[in-house]
Length: 323
Image 1 (cartoon, rainbow, N blue to C red):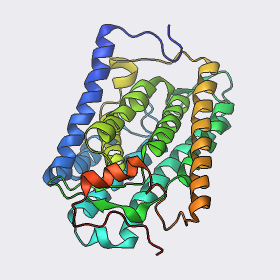
Image 2: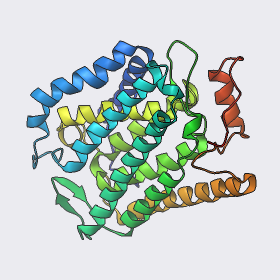
Image 3: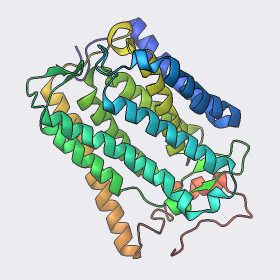
Image 4: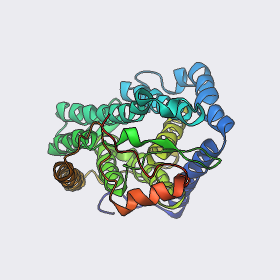
């Protein structure tokens, strides 16, 4: 028995890696081809909405996929994917300030959904653990801690007016201010959310899913973290809504149900987001920036690397103007 999860056999480990690489592969298909993205994030969801999900994700079903959160998360993730595709493939949109607000809005909305869910799980009062909506949850201070971490993560969102479309053939949506500091703080918060609220599914929807967008961010396409995140999230939740038995019956990896593990995971997430917030506020105050208008991390190596890899020499080095 492990600290976070019960032991898994070779077959389960193999399935976990298959899920990880499948998400990365479909993400690459969706981002490398406009038609690939349209098929994955528009045509397939329409078919599933009409013919599959009313059965597999019916309210109150035995698999826990019929709750409000799953449905809202599915369509908000898909809205992000389609909105980002519009920015990528409609040249005039990437030049509109109102359009560049959309990525920040959809990211904040998705985080807020999860923070509300953490607070809701605390409100259940399941102090010794219980099955609620056919999902095992245990209420505790970790829900409050991680809910606060999520709200801080929303505050950390910055630099959306610096978003641009890469000059290569994939036309990725690049957000230079989303450097590793934010990605790390988000990953720790989101993993804690999945551990708290979807505990016995979190080895997939937490660990594997987060790695499937974080690995491409650092090793395949720097600066496109939110695009990677939206697409892999949409892919995963569409799969879960379609095959709700997967995490519970086909390849289960339950948590240890140990309150100490829940506390430590959420504490780490809260600390990471507090540290990131303090660091960001310090930069804002020193440089006298307006975080609603200016990019914050333009002087960092991570920011400059993203610009170097995604803009041609004819483009401006960065956009950091008062709007």
